[in-house]
Image (cartoon, rainbow, N blue to C red; front, side, top):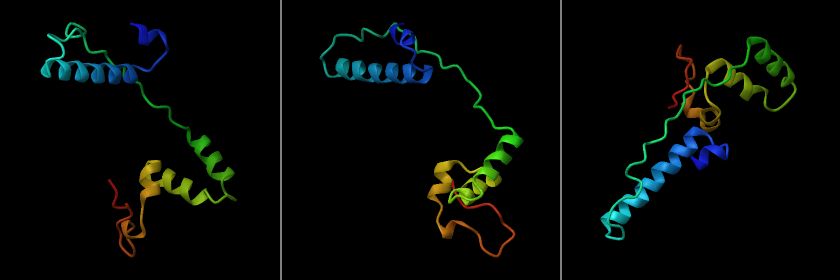
Amino acid sequence: MELRRTGLADSTIRSAYTILRAVLDTAVRAGGLASDPASGVRRPKVTATEAPHSTPAQVADLLHSADDTRYAPLFALLVHTGLRRGQALALRWSDVPHGTSDSQPAVS
């Protein structure tokens, strides 16, 4: 497959396949094509890979290095709550429980 030789990720190749199939299906339904020329092409597989994780020592080094920066509270929040960056940046004060034993922010 040509896309594989270009070094694209499996998920990118699958997305291109999905978009192409949707376009061709629409063309068939609209009468622009008699049949889908890609109907015999199998959907590309995506190989599952585990995301890299930092060691506890690397996390401690990061927190120590950030001590005197404006990012220290954000890094500490991320490390200690498990929130993703987007979740943490989207937090509002109303999401944070105050004066309760519930220490988890209300985010989804």
